[in-house]
Length: 284
Length: 265
Image 1 (tube, rainbow over the protein chains, first blue to last red):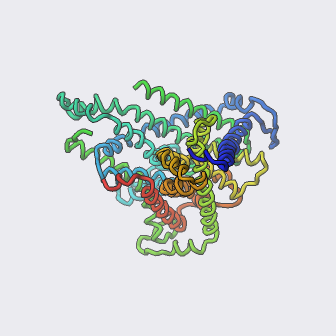
Image 2: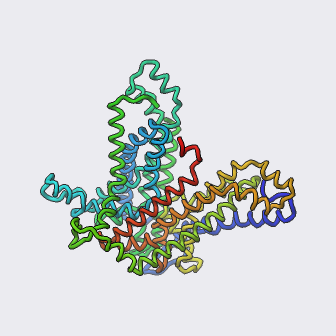
Image 3: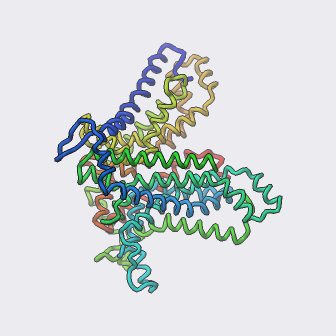
């Protein structure tokens, strides 16, 4: 144990304790609490009213715009999560079958994009998408299509593609970890008992890796639904998502309390998804 | 894992390759085109040039933004590592009130969506009349990267045997001497690794900065503003430089953080 024993230690210990409780309280708990409180304030005609009401929340439920957008965003993020898990699974499997230096390098290649600037990745993907983007130009140049495809213009499809590409590494890691945890002797037993590789995969490996797949899916979903930069950059005028609406409350619409209330609702949705994921994990 | 048949192995590798094309392919577009001029929205593939890079050195907005990013990055890293050590010692000392709860609180900003932590700080600063500036960005980044620094340091501190510390006390060292001469040297590689990771994260952080900054730009915010205008050579050059820098940080972080055995095998 540190800072016990001598006389000067007591002073150190008190100072450390004060900081260890005080700072997180001041810079993490207090902002979150003020955020929560703000969601009960209200704005009218550009004027903040500091009395507590439920009107932001009731506006969310009564106004015809918000629930459909939230639902649409949930479906979009679910699609992103499923796509990312489907694409991530083979990579995780490949990683698990490799060993030594090659495994290490491949794992590095999965991790490096995580530290790369989010906004730069969006920008790079954006340069490929779009009616005039590199993908369309390449396809026209290669004479594969006559007209630029409208599939890649800036809309919700572009958001779906971009988010999937951005979040694949987050799907790969949990699946990889769950594959690594499967005891080798189970696989050997299956092979010894005469199962083919395919049977071993379907009956032993896949079921045992499902918790990882569930974690990956809920992880990607939560990351996708909290994002507002991607829809802002590649969503175009029609690619409205819930995150973008929240962001606009703090910019153009200038209704901070309502934005805070919408964020609280978003946080509730996220917590529900995480809890649901946990439950599935325990069952499988 | 099991022995794969040739066909299965080939299929897996092909799918893996496809995913890596998706992950890295898009990045090649701005990097490659940064070495060519762009005229009327088309890349001039016939005339390679470094003019975009030369133009960057004359762009004062970008240079200021870069300096701001460095200031924020170094300050947030320093604060996060310092607080990380402090909180880790607090945790290690044990038998303190609500210690797991405090640990959870420290992890919260890293686990929650950045938009929420950014908005919380924005509202908090407004209500406490702290003007938005680089200082608020530094606080935002520190809160965000702290979890990473803390986690790295506390893991290393936990693995440090108590007998070292007891031996130091038995030999007559004071608490402070024990900390400086026994604990710190043992934490060295964890501290360096944590610092690099924190700096790399802060260097690229966009969502929180965008919400809590005032008129001062950091590099990602500057980029975000520039990108709305479209695909231009100076953005491409900047993107290429930042990517090179981030990759370097990754390699350094792995060097210091991964146990030595993993490298050789």
